[in-house]
Image 1 (tube, rainbow, N blue to C red):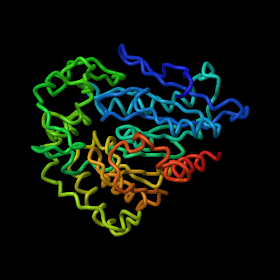
Image 2 (image 1 turned 90 degrees about the horizontal axis):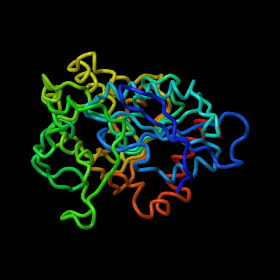
Image 3 (image 1 turned 90 degrees about the vertical axis):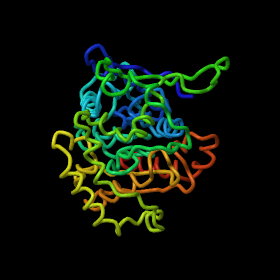
Image 4 (image 1 turned 180 degrees about the horizontal axis):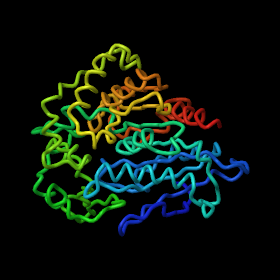
Length: 368
């Protein structure tokens, strides 16, 4: 386990304080100059989790040994907040790191050598940083990141069969306080820890925090984008449904990282989405804001991921390459969501494998 971090407030909004945990590099790994840093965003479907959730031990250990600080961040959660609020938090975090005082942590960081890393929903935060943050991150590492392609049946089509990690369908009525319209009366939430029923419960080990299943409900109802965009009446999701087409299985070329053949289809999809969306939400859709100005991006995504489909990474990686951005894609055969947290992951993906390759991408970006 990592040592105890220094916890710092980077933002206050209404009655909510948003925190970062700062982990300096190992003693002797950093010289006197400000250190490069990884800025890590947790997963949780944008509805649950905090800066301690799903901590990527494999990445932290490599960073600490290499003289790279590790910063894990909170951000506001859906609902009652929206993607606009999360975007503001991401932008404010990077501005804070450029001008804020981290001396209490025992290290200083070089704001020009920040790498944004995110798992699942945290990947979406990384994409927001790439588009909008100043200073812009030097690179992005997206591990099965959310948000590479929102114009898909997965996000927009109501579902009547299990679709998410093989888990059961849920009754939306059980989540009524967290659903539109009741959810709009909720106060902002800056973090929501993972909690489970105890051994004496009829459902031991089952999530006791309803937010842990909330994104599943939104996806099941086909209304996830309404909550991200804050556009329920009329429903943004309903307006986009006629535009979706079925996802196609990956080709052998795509599995190998060759995305050239899909360029025309990608451009056509982006054009349809751009024309259908109101301008006020364009900033929340990474596929609409791809330019040559993006930093380099490394995507790692399980081919069998049923929580965030691998086609998301293929689509966004392809758009970045089309724009002339350095973007690398590693499709991990047979792997589901959160493959890097499975038992034995270090043995499976370390030792010169995916973990080391991804970290090599980070170190190259920050000159370590």
